[in-house]
Length: 183
Image 1: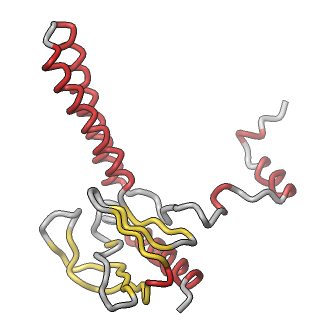
Image 2 (image 1 turned 90 degrees about the horizontal axis):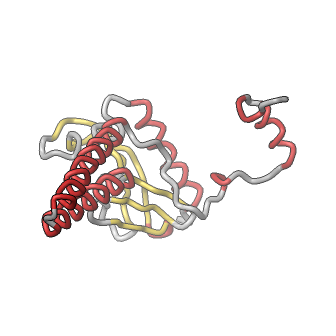
């Protein structure tokens, strides 16, 4: 009884079928890098806090104070939504353009309206806090000369202490720009 799901044999068998893999679809929005440990741990802490708040909602509901339980339930749902949005934040690319997802605002720019994507040395925010340090940032400029806020920095929650990962992600976004920009 071969257990191909536990081995790499399945990859060689699938290559013979010439079936496109799901991540080969360039029309789907995808993040060209993995979320960093700071972002994932922050979301995990928010989910842990949400579990305690939801437990408090259940205890409050069993005690008979339904308005208090409803408030705790709403706070727990808001914490879960914040954790999911935190994990969603970052830069997403597809054949259609470049998308910068922030906590409150998402900006999508088609590739034909982007004039350049490049890495620059500049003061960057450390973990999104007001404190700035000298670092690298990936910036994109629109056709009219206005630039988007920094797409990636080497001191944000995805790349703090991961310089190689920042370089790979910046190269990947620049490659997408080179491939799909018409200018």
